[in-house]
Length: 206
Image (tube, rainbow, N blue to C red):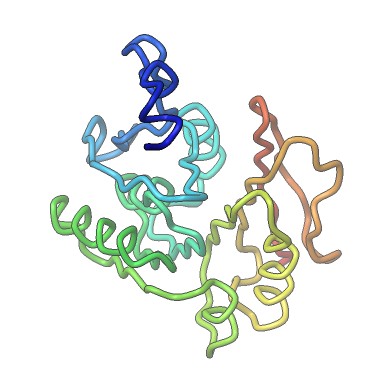
């Protein structure tokens, strides 16, 4: 008999002592034609949905550019950014997601919304960026915080031509980062913090 089995007091926890998961379980679209729609999301390690207030500010920034825009999300996760973009009039979105269950849930969300002009690609972001490029108007770059993927992806986006001249790149990073590792040619035009999250908008010169 194990020690735990011999002493059940050590393993018993009251309902009040259970730690509530911070994961939302649902994604709420906050603007556009699908405003207020809620979609279930998969809980997965490293998945960090963009907070509603950050999304609200971001799409206020993007309002003059979003209609008809071609958007690429390299770490799609819950799909919050590209689904919000579609809801607000983006012309085309490509969502790159490596985890199979997460990618499948994205496809289900698109089907539920009867969303057109949207593609889910199950792939590693770095490998995807090494393929023949397409040119996008807006790129969302929101990788896991404990990684060097901002620098690696930004370098590939610039070197391979994934963003149009005058196009925009949204970057989400730990707020503690003092200087984003972006190509020297990009112009940082917006930058804010919300708790531990720093969120930024950069432009590739026309």
